[in-house]
Length: 245
Picture (cartoon, rainbow, N blue to C red):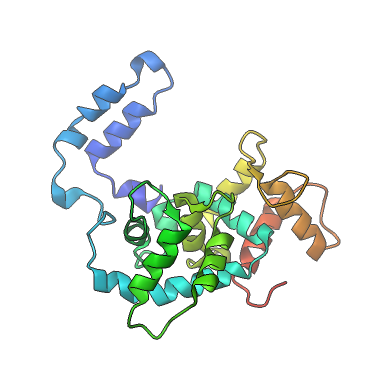
């Protein structure tokens, strides 16, 4: 079992198990879930450390140069490489991200209007505010190009899933011998019901697996007719290699 699940209290596990009941009549309703002891009896100290305001402004500001470095790296990745990371982000958990980097706190800090997503304006203005006084400075147009690279579905906003893509890029996901998110991502991509279509500016709509597979075919003439787990691992690994295509 994953470390994040083992760290959950018994009350928390009980709530999750009662919600993951297939038979609807035996499953907790929303009202019952809100009255569960995990919700009503939780102590402030038991709350996740990744909540708004849990780190001071100075601590967050100190992380911004590294965040900007990752944004610049992401901008130079192909759409297929970013799609591979996105497929892993769907299956990723907090334990798959760099544990010492405040990904949630930064997301909350940049989401100025608290609507659960970061607009390009919020990202640019938030980064500039946190970078004030730092030696790392970038013009607005460069920051906007980074935001556009992170906006995989071209919605004009950065959602949490896309933010996790950035987190996985900084976690050295491709260097792990047994990266669980990659294996889970492959299982999802192998199921047409979960293989999402990607808005990539092309006339022909493509799924994530198609975009990734075509890139692999471009780099390896011996690739098969279908995307394999090895193919996905290869593409994820290339995100850690500088100057790769």
